[in-house]
Length: 331
Image (cartoon, rainbow, N blue to C red; front, side, top):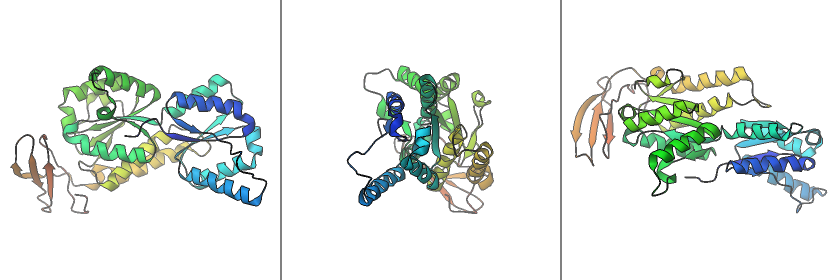
């Protein structure tokens, strides 16, 4: 797993460098990596130097996902700051914030904290039937430069697991958000249900993803839940990441964000992903079962089309493979 937070491009004027340093230091306090540089080694007064500097800045922007515009009169007069800003918007970057450099230091620090709450993510799941989706989703989020916390990697030997998880949930509630993968096995796990209670009690931003027709825990009654296929494809994982990004963007107030567009985008992505829109509500029938607890295989078949779903490779619970794939090759 990626350590040390994400990279954040700070577009700023060198005349605001004192406050920019405050912003940089605050992001670093939250374990992120802000980019705020002034390349004295390049002479922008020559055509060659200007071309090299332009190319370098654009390559850096192309490689980043998170951007902060440090807005000020000096920034609005700066040719390079305006070039950066226009290029970022032209490239369709969505994770963009503005910080008004005329604000007080306390107000600026509050804005930095607000930004950080949309970067760090804790994923709650059960290994019994949620690990594969967790692994694919976490990798996809890391590719998008989210800071994903992974319990199996980040808890040191000798540390009390429950105390550490509870502490991480509380910190994530303050500095990030939580994605919960609600599966059948999740609902039968006393630990997962306890963890979910901690998450709700922490007042964290929660994005619950419900597999197929799995019941929604009552503790999530006040939260909007999103249903996904029982066995998400690679394309589904991409849509889930888009959905998460759209939900987070709905919380951003910045230079390119319009509230109506944000919610329309969430609805459009969810319509593509929504389990009930894509699958016939039909139970697959278990046609084969073999193996011991540590090497277990179940095979389910859809009576409407004869296609099969194989579940197993380790201890698994009964897996309800509802839905069907008559109209596509998702399974």
